[in-house]
Length: 232
Length: 245
Image (cartoon, rainbow over all chains, first blue to last red; front, side):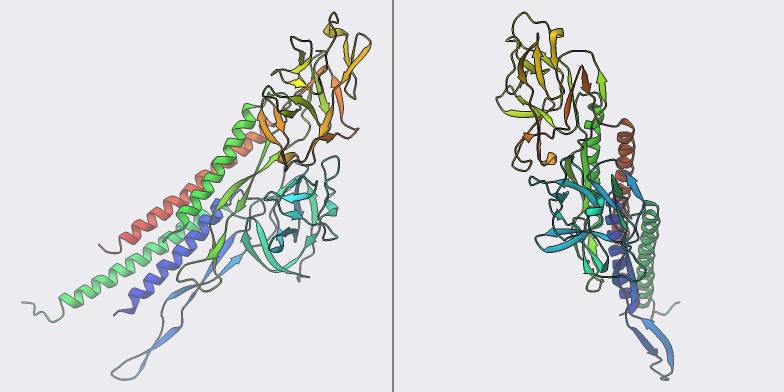
């Protein structure tokens, strides 16, 4: 069967993945410390086509499109002032360290609170770690000195949900750990304008895939009905 | 199938929660001792994307709203001149007993004398421990010192206890400007000495109108933008349907 059909269909499926990703970016347009995603696409292995009669080469043709990776843009975003004593933001690179049941995780979302033991926690109740890698106690005045919080640089950071990130702590080339500020939150990295443009572009690519399938269908229809008929 | 539909719907639901909180703040912009609600967002699970995505390509599933209690910053004080009005300056609450018998905490210091001449809040909740002002002493002869000692006609008749909890987000709103303690908030203990009462004043709401308006616009626009993702997903399904004419 015509391989173009499958190539076009794979292109459409790849755009669906991209669309899902854009929807997630838009849904998180107000999530503090959120980092936007990009999907990267790549052609599947290509085939060398040859003329079956003469054996001469025609050229190469790709067989499909594949989504090969998710790239998260961890660039620091502008901070917004909230005046809330337990809101924190890292001004520059690096992450807050958080103790979870699954081990140490990292976050750029500094919307913290105090638990019943007077320790600083994330909004979801995980303990926030200080420079000594121990939980931080909130002072009697309800405040925490921002210098007490640890800022960790991560290699290969990866999002895991609940605003948490995993990765390998260590020095990263070209990055220095930022300063912690209190009374501020980092804005979301999702750019609504960019997301809208990407969404339209993706939808039109999807539509183009549809047209390709329709055209191939017409061609095949012609082949099935017209070839061999004697026109009179 | 396009998961983006549900992803976007989750994001819209989160914005609705934010809008509800902002509406509550605005409605209480003039409520004595009101503390604004803190709402944040968190992204949801990331999992393997469907075909034709390679191993390790993940797609997120939207956002949810998370409430981190209230912002307990000091509200501005309003001079009222009423001798039974007290405003708390600093961290802490006045201990009261609600009409249903529960012990609670409040920052609403608009007090009055009830039928038995006991100090009570505007909703009738008694100040704990009960403070009774003897008959024949007019309200203007009552003075309340910075540490809460109530002096009526030259005699000390009791002390308004100022308490605090370790985790204010753990407090449960009981309505009537009051909060009750929970296991998450910890028990009420004596507030730091820096917390003082000011007689003849009330603490205004700390809901900031300008900030609430900005939050409202932000929430509404994000809601609108996210709805576009649903529309687009819908159009894409229509295109998929159009493959076979």
